[in-house]
Length: 394
Image (cartoon, rainbow, N blue to C red; front, side, top):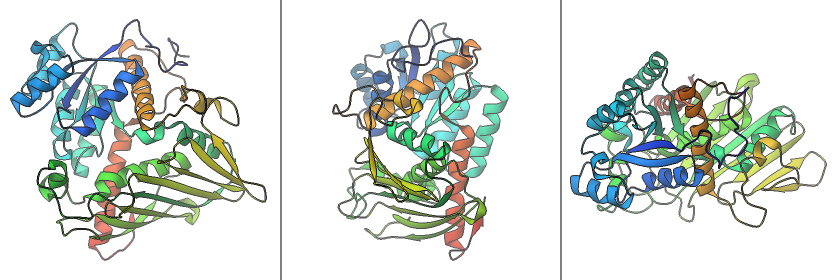
């Protein structure tokens, strides 16, 4: 049993909001804004500290924007970890919203300081670093949680629980895609994010697969409940000439030789944030599109299709209903998924910090092992491509 109520995701589980710090995410940082918006919408967090930019002036201005007190705006994240760990009112967790190559050092520093970590994906750029973070997390007992917001969409949760309850029977095949267009044309030098995503010294061995492929892979395994056993990948440059791939075609194999396909591209004009899955079983199918997140298509075999809409009742399972906060017809989208993510993370962190127990399934968060698995997926896809598209086994 839990020692506190977790049924209302918008009500703080303790007698106060948790205190959250940020590394990165300052002015111009889109990812940081997503994290901050999710934290605020959850009503579980107060943002009280940050090392928001490596540029001191930008850090200062960003702290003022976020109403962070000057004495808790830091020029260096190492100092932030040391000072916040020593304060009686120090942060309960830190959100890491920096480029991929810096995640390992920052996360390990805060874990060792006893501060719970919320890390953007991918967790690291190398599997060795990912495995080391898993070990540090186990040694310290501090939480390391990954920000995979798509699994906190109401209808994604609906699909996962329908599949686990047998709605489509045994899974026979799966298909997932994440399609974007921004890498089609030449790079704009003013967009720093594109530059480091194409720099192997900063992005690692892969660009598109490590950037958005990890989202699609994590979503697929979460919804199906299946673990990928092997992958076979081909990388391509379908947009402007760059150092690393902007497109990948990945074949997956699950237990009992269940096949899967994963298509990843950032160079498909007209595709904006096309994260989609189609899952077919012996008794039916399910499909979902992130650009139309409030609808789940359910196709029971030899029966009319059903469109299940986000809301209360109407075919919604209890585990998904708790993620829905507005009646049908009043739109909820990715911002609400981020809010759900930060609500469930808050419950997990509050439980650790108070020594409380959580019932199985009380929250569905992604931890250090999930983060390391995402890095391994990227590594195996890159290994497969470099070897000429041969199977690589987890």
